[in-house]
Image (cartoon, rainbow, N blue to C red; front, top):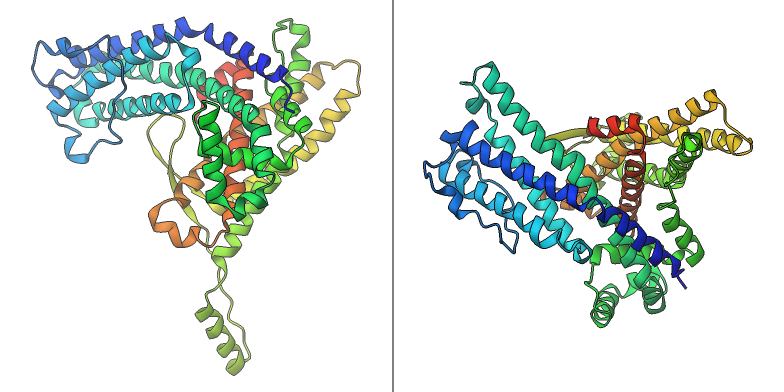
Length: 448
């Protein structure tokens, strides 16, 4: 049975997190004020000339509402801009008054919706700061305009998003530990689930309804992937993410950094699995078709020479998941090489950390070595996770259906599970590293 102490641990983590609630509310107020200034003082010509526009702001709004995207023909439309600005400001008040007023009642679907508001706000903001809008500005006007944009982006990316990311992790772990025994008794193994996927999906949904829990199909896949683990191991994995970091004595710095480094090192096996998946995918895609193999056979038969095929790299494009709106491009071969190098680094670092664990104390040089491990893991794992998530996004697009169909469903589930696991480690360590001034700066510099 899952250790019931985990529930107490997660309750304490939520209580600690919710202490920041008043700060988050203040940040939202600052953003709403900045958005009003955007219309009144920075880009008034981008909006309609209605002087009574603030009467449409509803500080008692009870629901969130944003579109999925901004159509090209509406990007510079004053009426659309005016309506969207009011919608975004109302959404901010909704998050303040409805969600943050009772943060314990925020669920995973709410967090997704709030993230959607944040992402749309950043897209909307980026569109207002077009070259056309900024071109007429003099130096001081430009500095003021850019300072407002930077302020809003920093508040969302560096202050507000980490709050909801942490809450999402806690809520996800609550879901997993609450349903683990139930799902294990119901499904037993991944093989059983694969044999009767539809049946078990409905059975889990029914159980969630009986337990008054919102069914989460994505987390159900993670749950099922974890069924092969012992309950003791799952207890340890979840507990290790919320280790007590309350001791702020500088003397404990080496211990705390070492624990964070070990959390990175714990992903050595998962990084190896990720490398294997990408290499496997690359080999599948590069395998010549039947017609090509038939052609090779006849060329070899009549000429005695076997034609050589050049293996091409695969470039994939994806949207930046860190808040700032931009499209990135990555190379699959470079990603595979990077993961391979990181895997080698993790294995070497594990030996080094085991050596430090055997010592009674760590000197200044030892502390520098641990910091080097954390620095490297911080940047490498963050970027590898981002590009792997981007690859999954690219793979799921309509024009890649034939490619996706070449990957067995079980491997697709395992790949998604790996990304979810790595995401948790990224979030946990980013949060814990915020206790150190150096890593506060590194976190603010992300994405880089």
